[in-house]
Length: 443
Image (tube, helix red, strand yellow):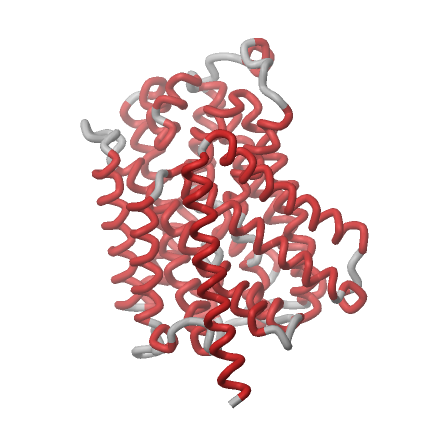
């Protein structure tokens, strides 16, 4: 998701004038608003009910804490490599640090690819009798991953045109969905609060942490640093503006959904909650509109993630932290990286449920953002960062990751073992490749 429009636009905008603030905000929004609300709404309502809008606000606050270090490091380094490059440059003598951040970032992207493919499939088959068939959903998810894999291998230019159409169309449809839902409210917030007053603060904080992945993508702006005017001012301005607008979009849709759709309908069909509820209230056309919005949003996110993250994977492989084959390009396209990402994403879809994929993605990007905060703290004098805000960001992100693992330990211990097992594999793989790099240098 993180590369949804930036790298695409860099392919066919590079010869144009520098990107201004409006374009940069659109790039970041294209990355963040990639189906997140369709993914998190059902899960959030099932856990905290009427407090879902509050969860979305708190998720935005956590994302803002993560953004602080990205902004400071982005202004200081001005490197389009963003996360991986920042950490590698901050700790140049640690190959393990570079390898670890590379592995975590790439597999974070793989988890978001799996997440949006799963959501695409849930909405795509929501009108069919087999809508609740898990394996049908997973096969459709695999089919959409395959489709955008082939498109990315086939043509960068063609994929860029498709992506532009999807990004701008989905924002229009999301605005229409928000208006229609709010205009068809069936209840009020005070009434819902009376019927949902037993939710704990801890539950709200846990769900806010779980839904953090919906804000993943704001660092798109940093990837465009070589094409923007005045990075010192525009990086912070566009990232914080895009975060605010994404939070506003999610907030309005969530309020409309909980006011217009009965909670039972949202919880029962949480994988495609908005489509199910809209159909009961607005009829067939309302369902089709929501499904179209969800398919465009998730398709945009899938396409952009395959495009951008595969190129990041090729760069990391070229540095020696992934198999060398993944760095090979055919006609400037990292075909083997694209295929590897897509295969791994499909395997994750097959192995996990929507919840475990969502939680793994959120934990991963919380941990990656935590490492960014640590890097920023390490050179806080050079980045002119506030020690208090940097430490607050570090603590907030650590707390968010810990809350998700706490929830898993108490409610889904098998899922927690699955997530911890994945991290053990990733950390071991990154360590082995860093050791190989050390041996090469010693020799």
